[in-house]
Amino acid sequence: MDGLFIFDESNDLIYSKLNNKISEKLLELAKNQGLLDENNVEHSNTSLDNNIIMQIFSPLITSQRIMLCQFDNSYSSIQCEDNFTIVLEEILGCLFLKAGTDSLEFMEKSLKTFMSFVKRICGPNIYLLKTDIDRKAQVNTLYNTWTELYFEKQTIFIEAIEQLLVNSEVKRKALQGLRSIDNFKDDFQKSHGLLFVDDKLLSLYSSRQSQPLSAADLIFITIFIKTILKNKVKPKQIYSELFFFDGVTGCTQSGCIPNIVHVSFISDDIYLVVLTEHSNLNVSNNLFDIFFAVQKVKNLQSQGDLENLRQAYDTMDFQIKQIQDALKRVKNINIDVEEAIKIFGVKWDLLKKIYLEYFKTKDRNIILKIESNLPKINDSLKMLFNLLIIKTCHVKQSQVKVVDVSTSVEENLSSFKEFLTVKSHTNFSITSYLEEFPGLVHFIHVDRSNNRLTAPNIEATSENSQINFKKKVWSMVEFSRQYLNKGHLNMMWKDVAFHYTYFMWFEDMNGMAIKPKDIPNFSVVSLKPQLSVGILSGDYYQRFIEAAFPKTNPNKIKCYELYCIHLGLVTSTVVLEHCRRLAATINDVVGISRNSTDLL
Image 1 (cartoon, helix red, strand yellow):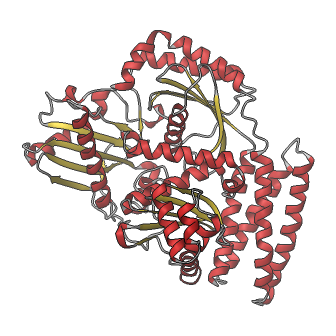
Image 2 (tube, rainbow, N blue to C red):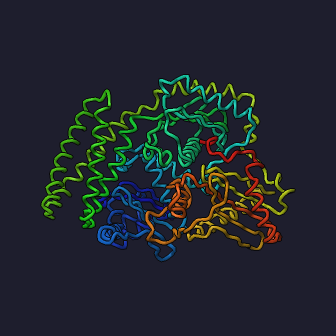
């Protein structure tokens, strides 16, 4: 049973995605509440009407709004009878709701991941899901792909990048092929070229002026590739879409970077991805920030927190000045854009005048005027975003040049295709460790400084035993994450067959181990915003480092994770010794430098 919903500030339904079981459940509720005639339910094969869904959830949504507005203490989840759970998140005035019977941890994780997909597809304009059928379909297919891969692929489950282990000659040839992007600087002035072998990263090349990509962006790209592969891929066809990437935290233009993503299939297992930055980054990022600044002001007003309103208003005023300055520098704008900019300026001047009157007189009746005019600013922002970014995107314009880059890559890798196909299935095997680490069955090492994963393939003597062992690995990670969230960095436990261990530790830039002064407990509900363990929906580890080392620059601290599974007969002393040696030698064994610059 699984359903996803998005409601706007008026409780109108923007988006819904339901499977058959929850549709039947909601139809039954509608019948019991008298919202639907019993005969119509029995003979209807159509989907639920949006109005019925709104009426069913309206009391809960209203209660959620009251808890947020009056107490700033909204619900995060509600658990009902028959293991039915509702998880809620709010962003930009829209309430995201997931209902189903999965575990609470998975539902929270999947809802946050879904929200990150909506952001990457729609940017700050969530209402596109209501008006743009193609974007709604894209959100559905990407989310479905992630759900499948989450239970299949270590990289998606752990949320980290696995780099293909190849010799220097293959690396050189791959990079040489990607560098052909520089031959088309007019089309790819700010661009990235990536080569994937299955879900493993072979090579990445970025032009000098481009904004760096985050590991979460790369994971999203692999999910996009797998979504394309669900359909029959046509040879030499280029698949292109516009996405909004996060970029690297701390960079001046991070947050909302529009990129046109082109995917070309070199072979069944080798994929070329070319990303080109789209539109003016100052405009896109400033628009993105203003959406949140306006929402912050609206939240403070609804909560009656007029003391902090002035500071939030000043932030909004500053950001609107920035976007107005950025819009003046935009060239070759059409009549529609000119008109939209003019309307936005008029609406803001009026609203600004009302705000200044309020700050001067402190007359609370003026707040009513503000609340009636503030939504008009939101409408103008959506119009500007659509005209300047969405409608100016022509994904097919540079596809011809992508074909040329694809040809160059294919020529450079022609001698290695069979080798790379084999490597796509087996990057490296646990058997190479058995002599040095007897009793070791599986391990996962993650450098969270660059989110690189090193792990052998999950191997077994039969398909059933492989599935069962994979469940053991997934269960180990889920169990350790629950306790990590409570502030436990080192764990060891056993079942009938295996011995499990998990360690998280930190090092400075010289490789010396350092201990955190305060270990955060993110299981406490009052700590907001809450993040799921991982990076797709927000960098959990970055936040962990910031909380654990409050007086240290987080970029100067490296974070590592190590999961190990040993046979149950292996003693705890041997397990600890193996973990210590693995942590110390993993980079030497697989031949990867700890320096993060060779990945990003």
